Amino acid sequence: MAVLFLLDVQVTLLSVLLLCWAGGCAGIPDPRLRDLLIQQEASRQTGGAVLLTDTEQRLSAQLHELKLQEIARPEFPPAMHFFKARALIQRSPIFSLLQKMPKGAALHVHSSSMVGVDWLVKNVTYRPHCYICFTAARSVRFLFSAQQPRTQPHCSPWLLLETLRSKMNTTDLDNSLIQNLTLFTGDPETAYPSQDSVWSKFEETFNVASGLVSHAPVFKDYFYQGLQQFYTDNVMYLELRAALSQTYELDGSTHDRAWSLKAYQDVARKFVTEQPDFLGARIIFSVHRGLNSSEVRVAVEEAMRLQKEFPEVMAGFDLVGREDSGRPLWYFREALSLPSERGVTLPYFFHAGETDWEDTDVNENLLDALLFNTTRIGHGFALARHPLAKDLSRKRGVAVEVCPISNQVLKLVSDLRNHPAAVLMSEGHPLVVSSDDPATFGATGLSHDFYEAFVGIGGMNAHLGTLKELAINSIRYSSLSPQLKDKALTLWQRKWDKFISENSQ
Image (cartoon, rainbow, N blue to C red; front, side, top):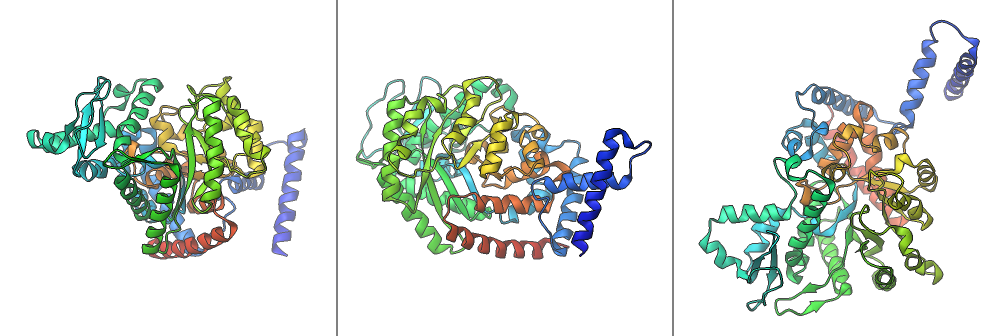
């Protein structure tokens, strides 16, 4: 009866409001109408319809107070470049809470940038038989080999790292190697004055890491370490974009993509056995959008075969790489149509709209991704400027994978309060928060990106219900089966209740 009464009041107030807009009212508007509009607008935002328990409301009030303190700082972290804000964020009580919070799943992470680069340098490069060469472009390459490797074009003769370390200051050498594997710097504006410069360095970091992470023994250890780092950050499931590039052994022999998928599957199973409250990982096979249509056709055909062979671990297919300089999705339309033509279901998870340009072929990627029935949209930075694509994605329940730090570091937006996802959050558009390439950006797991989304993009309107819905969304919009989603939500709720009871005052 109370609900019906409230609805009657709302209908009456809205009727009066419409009458006022039609010129039937004068003077100061009815404050009840104002309150109603504020309430209704708040109910539409991400988490606005989430009902909080008394204990959750207390924690939400605490978070609100902490946000007020954050805003009062001389420097507001979301308005700063992440490289300059990271230390401030890590001292924030909000960040400390977010680290403890069960965040659900990470659905947009690239496999070769999931582990902190410190671990790569201080663990992997200290292993036996690790060689290094120095390129003409003042970068480096790594290779594990049982024998002295042949010199490569545009690279110095290979040096055994163990020998090089014996002749140099180890700390200085390690720091220089770390700089080759990450974008992180104290002066990002000078280091990366344009999108072209930051993307050039960004893609180079993957070239540097390749010789390390594609060595078969390291490949498995690296993935295990990545699972451990995300698990420590209270993430319970991952979906990784992976190129499934050839892995190699010490004698130079190589393994194919099926070997890599099986390795992912085996390591994930081992980790789940050791950590039963972790649900595992699935792989989105990804190839570069710089390939031609014939090459992508071959990749799509292989993706169909791999999915049939590894249904547990193979989630689907994507095209990666810089959209502004890569080929648009429509260029690959014949290759991408192969699964439907053959009656095969191959889920797509397309990067689309990762641009701040308008009226280019890249902007059409959003509509084309939806035409090809993408399961989710990677980044979707431009979606707010495309009302039809936005409407279609909402109606179809196609979630946008928002990666705040990535978008800022790659120079799509400087102040995260101005991130277009703020519009999507205010409308309750399907969203998940993820971290894209956390190791390359100097972030860890999901907590840094959750901070930027909650404090910067969400602003003062975002509350505990926002965080709760974002975490639930990460499971709801995952590629898990309905049965595993139910299991994941039950497990997540148990973790969430524990988090609330331990942190509310």
